[in-house]
Image (cartoon, rainbow, N blue to C red; front, side, top):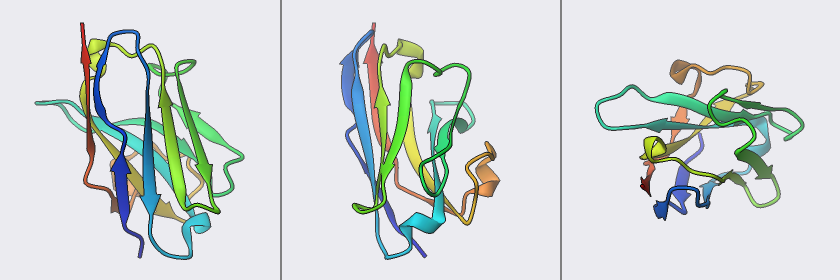
Length: 125
């Protein structure tokens, strides 16, 4: 079992940047594919990006390609989300998620077994 804690959310102007972090507990972090999802008020939770266990493969929603970057540091049990050129419509709660022995290819909420509590990102226009 793994526990996830996100940090780094906040208020940013449109076009600005934020870096989210997700710290995981336990000694098996490197066996989990990791992902970021987001959920805006009144909308379903949506896939943003994912990364394989080793970090060698990354996957992005089309809407964030070229602007967001996911990375991980297995020695620090942490996954990161660098978000650039943020848009007001990307205001949401951002969640970190883990899938043990996963590849990172899945974009389905149901594929991820563990979730953080979320961190609010607000992009002002």
